[in-house]
Amino acid sequence: MAHVPFQQEYLQIPTITRAYTTACVLTTIAVQLEVISPFQIYFNPDLIFKHYQIWRLVTNFLFFGTFGFNFLFNMIFLYRYCRMLEEGSFRGRTADFVFMFILGGIIMSIFGLFVNLVFLGQAFTILLVYVWSRRNPYVRMSFFGIITFQAPYLPWVLIGFSLMLNNPIIVDGLGIACGHIYYFLEDVFPKQRGGFRLLHTPRVLKYLFDAPTNVDDYAPLPEAERPGGFAWGQGGMAGGQEGVAGGQEGVAGGQEGVAHGDIQEED
Image 1: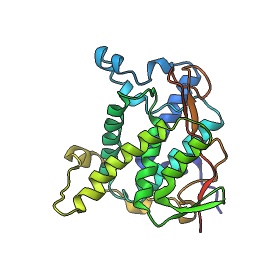
Image 2: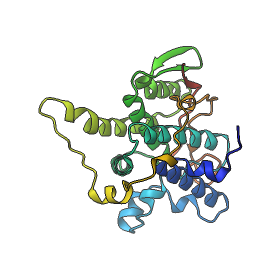
Image 3: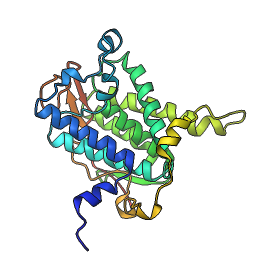
């Protein structure tokens, strides 16, 4: 097989997945090099609404902890499910995908006013997992090769695994709750008797993101590499946020994240 240059491979990643994962990596590099501090980007309602530090509404979704084993697995998990959504149910609907990001971020930020989380990126990843799992109900998956289940149970398996490890489940719970709100409004309610569409992608997003593209240049992830998960070790979605400056620690929230196990799709 001919070697594919990194630049070409990178540009073949769908637009939103490429932009989001790149932003997360660059934010982490900036923190690692002490160009910025986690104190400057974490979710703080007082600083946002009283001191007008509006950027925190976005930056708190971009930091998953400093470089390390857990950061790597967080990025792989985020990349795979984000890409599978963008290449699957959102194929050719980039504006709708962006709208899901915006709406999901708004809902999660509202919930964030009432929970003690300072970085919401991990919860947003669970939102993506939840939406993907509900839209792929017949994909069979396995957990450590011990139990098998269908994709809609994946978020609950992850939350159960967090309980087994005595990790706080607030991150998983927040992601599941916000993911279900979007899924219900977009996929369930409009199909019920008397239901109707509540979510409409703004025209400005369609104008910006749904311009005609050359489909011949599009290279989706190969089918063999599009399972519902990854061969995880026990550091999966762990990414603590207990102190602003340390390893996988966040800013003053005691936020240990969720450790996810070995989850992969069966053939």
